[in-house]
Image: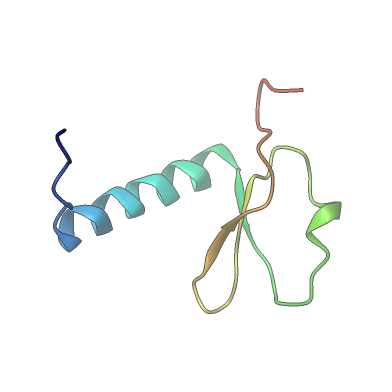
Length: 66
């Protein structure tokens, strides 16, 4: 049995930044406040970012999906 060694924190941070940038470019992430009703966001939005920087996935649909 082989296991992958954990990635260094700097490599994880870089991957996270690239992922967030991709979400921003494709319109799949929007900034919201803590009390906003995210169920009313457009279907293409799959992630939300809160004022404290927390990013959460809110749905699994996106462009090209039904």
